[in-house]
Image (tube, rainbow, N blue to C red):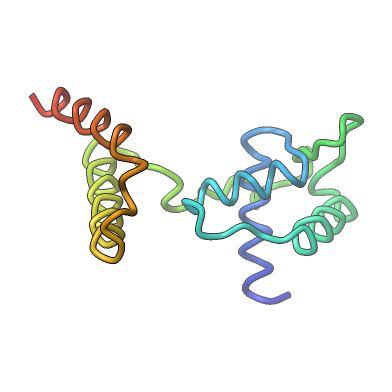
Length: 132
């Protein structure tokens, strides 16, 4: 099994450890967790779900969602590094990284943020209140 497939396996198990999901919901969650940078293909996710089902690590429910089986074991307890801020300082660092992204976007295309300007102003206002 390639390194990439092992990574996909870990993501799927972590996601299913949070709640039962369909294959499409798993792909949506991976895209969300990666900040939109990666969305696995159905040709990767569904064969893996089938393999995990055959191994007895997950089971498919009657509603079509997959969930961890009791035999999932230690693999399913892995934590996904960077899955979200752990402290207020971590959240501020994440925000700083996102601001850097928006700055780069604005430099490369001065009109890129026009549509987002009202929402951005709202976020700035909320952050300003927090900083007081």
